[in-house]
Structures are given as structure tokens and as C-alpha cells.
Image 1 (cartoon, rainbow, N blue to C red):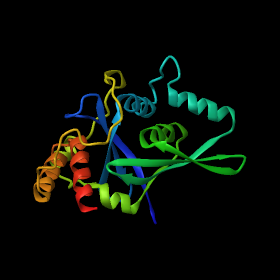
Image 2 (tube, rainbow, N blue to C red):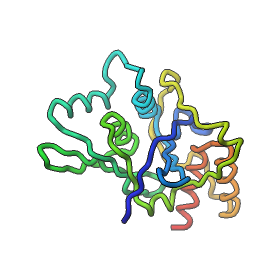
Image 3 (tube, rainbow, N blue to C red):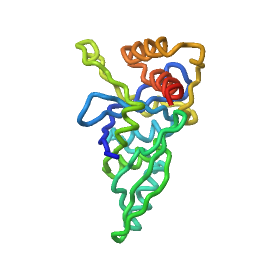
Amino acid sequence: MSLVKLTIKGISYSQTQNGAYALILNEVDGDRKLPIVIGAFEAQSIAIALEKEIRPPRPLTHDLFKNFADRFDIVVKQVIIHKLVDGVFYSSIICERDKIEEIIDARTSDAIALALRFNAPIFTYKNILDKAGIYLKATPESEQHDDVLSAPETFGMGEESNQAGDSYAKHSLSELNEMLDGAVRDEDYEKAAKIRDEISRRES
């Protein structure tokens, strides 16, 4: 299976799930986006890693892991989002120490937070992007309203959840696809991710 490189576009607030955020990943050589619902702590950690000038007074958990890895000469080479099951993304962290490579299972939000700190690339498999990627048509209006990374101090508390908070079971597939288009137009990526997961469950 071929790998597709991803970059981080930004983090948007969840409009339907309190304390949750949508991490938006971009396909490097394409127009698809991969929204992943993450918790507040992970969102804060990713935001701090992206905003290079922000330095917390004490190390966050992911900073501690980075310091620990540096001390013992462990390098994160890359992160691969390798599986999607029932709306939950599974990731692997590819590490190296003394030229020996190890693969470590991780939550996707944690894996990406570490990838940022190690300047490691993020990949997913083409079949996952085909299944879960959202194609956003470029329009002048959407270009003017690009995603804005939320300020870390505004994050609340929350648990990571990629399960649909609202039930979309009563809607038909055609209705869900229309709702998906509307959520993407409104840049409500967290809602779009939930609708996409419901569509994927039905089509699998």
C-alpha cells in the first residue's frame, strides 16, 4: 500500500462537542483534508508545538517524552496513521536507536504531537485517505476564511473521542452526503468527520 504524506493545516473548535477539537491534516500532493477529532489536552500540546515562540514554564507530557528520548538517543523517524476502525484512527510511531528501528502503537493525537517535536513527517495509507479524506473545493470565499489555529490558553478540558456525538442514523446516505458538503462549506470539520464516519460505517 502506498503512503501519502500529510501536513497540519490547523485546529478548529468543535461546534457540537464540548471540550473537543478537530485537527485538520492536508494531503501534500492533493486537495483532500483528513479531520481528526481530538481532546483538549492534545489540541493544546499540538498548538504549542506549532507556535514556536510559546514556551510553557514546565514541560508538557509530550515535551517530557522528547527530553527523555533525546537523553537516550531515541529518534522519532516518522508517524504513520495506519488504520481506521469505527471512526477511530490508529497510528504507529517509527523510532530508531543505535540504528535499530522500533514500531510503537500510539493514539493519533499523541503521535502527531510527538512528530511535531521531532520534526518527523506524518503519513497515512492511500486507502485510508480514500475512505476518510474530505475534498474541499477551492473558492474565493473559502480562501479568505482559512483555518485559524486556536490560541493554546483557550483550550478547556475534554477526552479524545472520534465517535459521533449526534446520531445520524435516521438520515439517508444522500442526506448525509448533502450534510457533509454543508459542513465542509461551513468549515465545521469536526461535524464533517462525524458524518463521514457514519457514511463509512454504512458503506463498509
